[in-house]
Image (cartoon, rainbow, N blue to C red; front, side, top):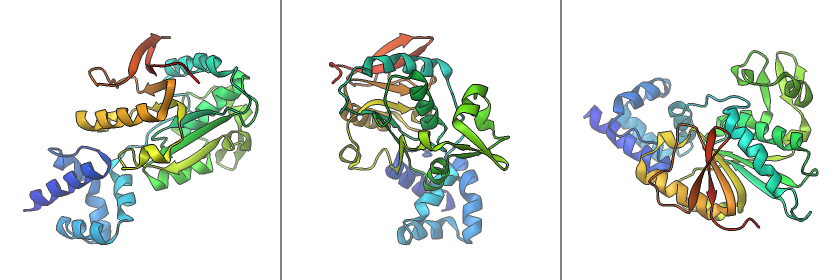
Amino acid sequence: MVQEEWTKLAKRIYQYCGIDFINQEATLTAKLTSRLQELGLTIHEYLLYLNSNPAEWDKLIEHITINETYFFREEKALEAFSAILQEYQYRKDTEVLRIWSAACSSGEEPYTLAMLIKESGLFPRGSVQIVASDIDSKILEKAQRGRYGKKSLSFRKMPEVMLRKYFFATGEDYQINDELKEMITFRKLNLLEPYLVGKMEKVDIIFCRNVLIYFDGPVIQKIIHRFADIIKPGGYLFLGHAETIHGTKSPFETIYQYSAFYYRKGGTPS
């Protein structure tokens, strides 16, 4: 009976956000047992609790996802991104370059992209907008603060020159400067929510790294099609180095460059 209840929860999680714990109920149990103990609920009671307390989904997501990340992660992909930026430098002054960091976690990725954009010297202030989204409300709050412990592993790949240029020390932390923060808009988004495409502006580049590993084939297919609808013709998609959409029907072509691979949507950039 208890096993059946955990299977029910796994299916509900899959329907809600696409994360697949079906046939992995033992892993799900390990991740959520502390939350059930905190609430003093059995798994049966917890299923009912989710019905009457929709905000509990935020807590559930906190427990089942891994938000381990750091600045300047997967440097070869970032080198490719820096090269791609040159394609967009001659746009009209009124046309904003839009980049989406999907599943941005605690913010290291969008802030890294902002630093690279600043370092490129290609774009005047206000001409680039980064949308950083995640399904986890708590981790988004941390990302918006832009404050990280000095001893945090977030800085394991941080070039010293970048640390001095874009952060300032405050107590035991380093704080992102306002010039970078103003480039980024943070939003809570579920990649599987029904009206995602309508909520997002068309963008030129999407980063969605180390996210698809949570999903099965049908969910990956759905997300990639949504990305295709949101990316402008000629735009780019970056996934994690261990992720691929090979075999997935999509309008993206694979590009191999700089010891990294990424994807380009067909068409001419606007």
